Length: 158
Image (cartoon, rainbow, N blue to C red; front, top):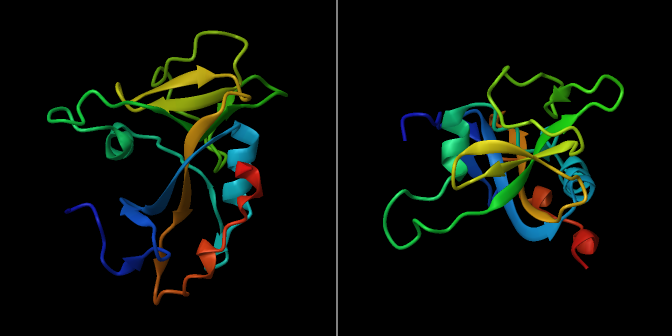
């Protein structure tokens, strides 16, 4: 794909996407458990985080195909977008705010956001909802650091 820069590498077993590396996790957990799982892993000195799918292009990488046998498949994934309790503003895991009007965040109660892969939209959900998730880490310029990133602690899934 034209979006990928081959000089940027990802940890073994991760998929390259635009400017970052993604690791989808099929286990369903709460937003807090997913965020902790991702943040406990570093690669090249960079801490992992929940997916920051800020643009329609990034969200389309997670969306299912629009035709064929998998066209009816859809799911929700926790993302790094969460409402800041102190000021009631939505903020991504990297500290940036989402574009105004880019998401369906109407209700006051839910404080976390999920990606609806059927529509490609971000929707607000309760943080205790158990969903699949995708970890993200910035790509590293240089040689691979080995597979030590993949030594995940699976206690969150028991």
